Amino acid sequence: MFIRRRRSWELPESAATPESVYLSRRNLLGAGVGLAALAGLGGAASILPADAQAVGDPATDPTKDLYPAKRNDAFTLDRPITPEEISGNYNNFYEFGSERRNYQIADLAARMPRRPWTVKIDGLVEQPREVGIDDIIRAMALEERLYRHRCVEAWSMAVPWTGFPVKDLVSWARPLSGAKYIRMETFVNPKVAPAQNGFVYPWPYVDGLTMAEATNDLAFFVTGVYGKPAPNQFGAPLRLAVPWKYGFKSVKSIVRISFVAERPVGLWEQVQGREYGFWANVNPAVSHPRWSQASERDIGTGERRPTLIYNGYGEQVAGLYKDMAGEKLFM
Image (tube, rainbow, N blue to C red):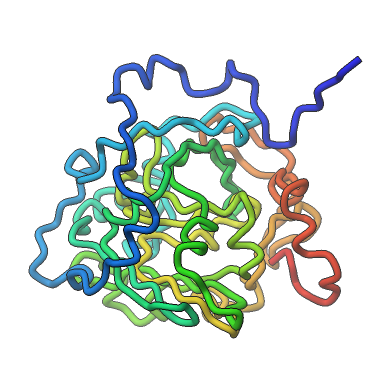
């Protein structure tokens, strides 16, 4: 007799986003170009020029025809999806301010120009280049994944991200053998991001992963959410989602991806290394210095539930950290 064991991240179909939400949107179109087409691109327009027109509305996104993308049923949930009106207005995006519980961040982020936008690929790669975000998005096979998201501040949500595996971009970038880490860097534009005019934080926002983490199946570059291009407050037009780690590892609005030999030092690690380390894996048994991580509050339901080791993704990622005695894996 065959007994199917539900995987740790799976959700019954009844808890998924209703089909009616998607039937009202456009059918998925082909991605248009292959990965190989990126090889000839370079020298794109400079990132966020001072005179760029602020276009923060996802409805104007040049790649909106690619959404909604087909859902990958290997990545589902054990809880309901957080409504967009809640997750879209509860944002940690310190470039725009530190208050996440109202519409302030979403409203300020909407001023950020979405185009032109380029991503620099450099460091230990065969051919450094700068590529337009639309060329990247159209070269990748987009898919939707349902992921849990766990903030280090002990709140959580469940989100239908659209994007592509980090390992696909790593494969295209063709890193050299000396590359041990991938370092990601966010935009700098003080004209639209008020906090970047101050001196509290060492801008730009930086964080990174090991190459093994970056090429794990779960590591995901996000371009959309809720079946459409991501609004700015979610980290458009390109952000990272690594669901087994605390949310501060998921770099938003990425403009540079570097392959490096030395471990990157993230912004929060620079600011307060005693509380925010490089690994930042979720663990209910390891408290933050100022609060417990044993439970979390779901911002969608208000429910408080026990925190899961690796946010419930241990089956997929625990093997990355074997034989790492002495490393502070959970801060």
